[in-house]
Length: 80
Image (cartoon, rainbow, N blue to C red; front, top):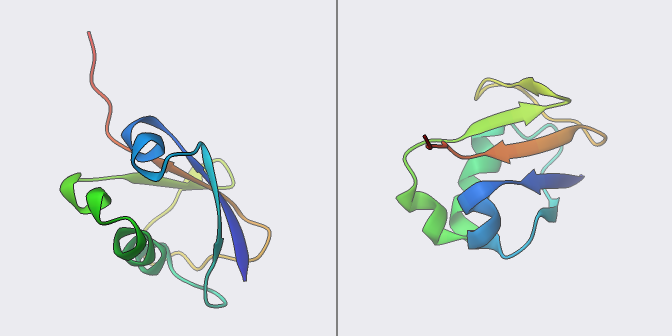
């Protein structure tokens, strides 16, 4: 299936774009998606954690993705 992934913060810088179109297996889990992204963009492995939102809600690693899901990859943020 094809997914469109919105990228924010350092993830956007690593990938070089604010969004990414990605082919994944049908009903890929969030954990599987993260493994695929880390394989394609090894610099993502240097980041300690990510929040993944699916359809505007945070999703657990075992959540199964579907063709029309809106996925956002949100790295940890800091600031003051």
